[in-house]
Image 1 (cartoon, helix red, strand yellow):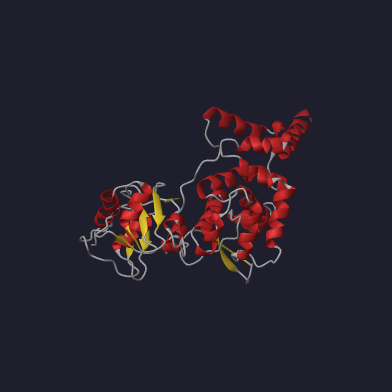
Image 2: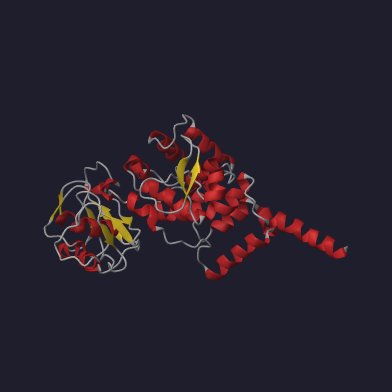
Length: 350
């Protein structure tokens, strides 16, 4: 009888400590580190990301979140080759992405905002100005609910999510503990905190981004930044392939202007970007450091009108390496729909 009682007691304790995601508070405790990590990488306020996650998932209770690790209702689209699930949203049985880990969903959401022209003006806002971000999302068409901005703001202020805009991935767990002091009695949470102290690194571990959604999100990288009229509008971005710095040219300019702005010689810029001239065109991708020898995704399906140089710039790969991987003569151009190998070498045809 004592053994039965002891086993039952352990079961009760385990349930008490488990993060069941049945409340908004438990969702915040679990996913605040993800939101802060994304803020560091993409400059999106953690409060906004977390509030959107809370709203989209109903505090982690939505079917998409529980069965698909999809916290932002991201649909398949034509480029998605990963697992999927059917779910009724705007229409019956729509196709939604299924992720191996919620963190991938968080990063996909960040890329959705960062790589679409509709949201470019958001990134001109102060990272701590969650109210402007909320209204900016609504204005850009993120949601159809006319009260969407106010719903986000209400959640942010109700749960003091703005506190996470002031922290970083090394300190986020302390911010969570300050917000929820009772977590000092949670063995799992305190173990995470101890791990953070021991390593002096973020508790969240960055998962390499899947190939499946990248191709579409980078399909027209030149659309990241829309109409911009001066060099002052150029934003340095970190490329998903190794974090290498690059910019999108806002208008036709001479390479000398970029060289002067960033203190990098024209010869280096020409070498790193395999340029055959010094005139840059609007929406050109220009790397500010040497590109990689391999891609962060395995293959890519060529779009109409794309050249090998376009693909090399899109994925941050040295042009000569790209030609070599695909067993193509230098100068030869791909056909629309052709599979381009970005990591391993193209298999020899039998």
